[in-house]
Image (cartoon, rainbow, N blue to C red):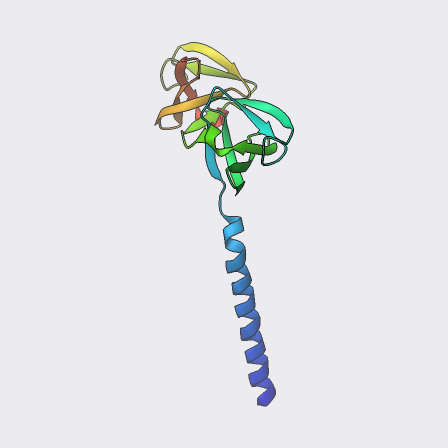
Length: 154
């Protein structure tokens, strides 16, 4: 009988340790914060500071997922899974999308039967103005507006 109690105690302890481990891991498993570039052009750096190399530039309304923060610097990932560092003053929470299809038709209104008013290649960022079902009303930094289907963006 003594061994049975010890076995039950050990099994309970093992379950408790597993649950504790899950709780400790939970914060790192949370979804990334979605941000977007709020200035005309923003430098992406190799580390958290201006002393680090500039890797590339991102244009206004480019969405990114913040992975972590170090002071005023954000470590992020973009739609191509590329990672870098961005100063927090260059981003905000404006809802944005970026085209992922090779060529996207931007329409005058929501629906495939609506006039195509312009096209966008993959990698063009837009501010989200509104939504209608699976259609997104968008605006480019240059002012062009239209509608595109949500299956064409990240």
